[in-house]
Image (cartoon, rainbow, N blue to C red; front, side, top):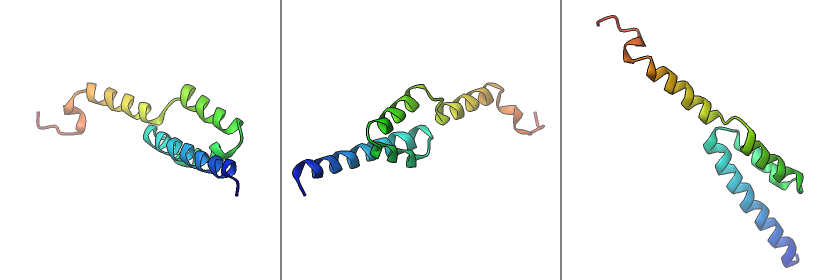
Length: 80
């Protein structure tokens, strides 16, 4: 196996690992990281998706913020 092919495989694996971590941290399925192995267009899709997509993590944080602004007495406890 030529060094160029081996280097390409290692670079692809490294990029897939990086995208796997990023996607799992923002709440997307990490399996989408395998789009890295689709030449050129796969990486563009991932970057555009991360740049312009609505992250599930941010949606969760926004819902939690709205819930917490309602006050702690809204959890069903009528002892107040």
